[in-house]
Length: 59
Image (cartoon, rainbow, N blue to C red):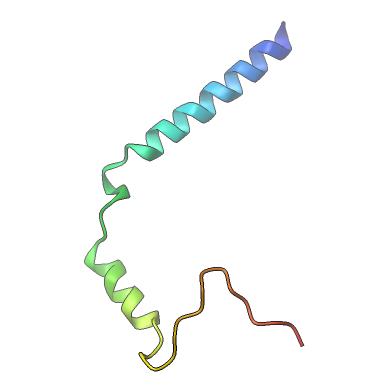
């Protein structure tokens, strides 16, 4: 009985967290500060940007 309760409670809390994250107002909005920060960190136009999650190979 307690196992079913614990599983149900944790899954319900996870669903609540996901629900709240998906319906945040700022989820699809980009603020000017993030645009400026992204432009500063971008490389020059001559060099293509590395794919997300890419790391240099170890020596």
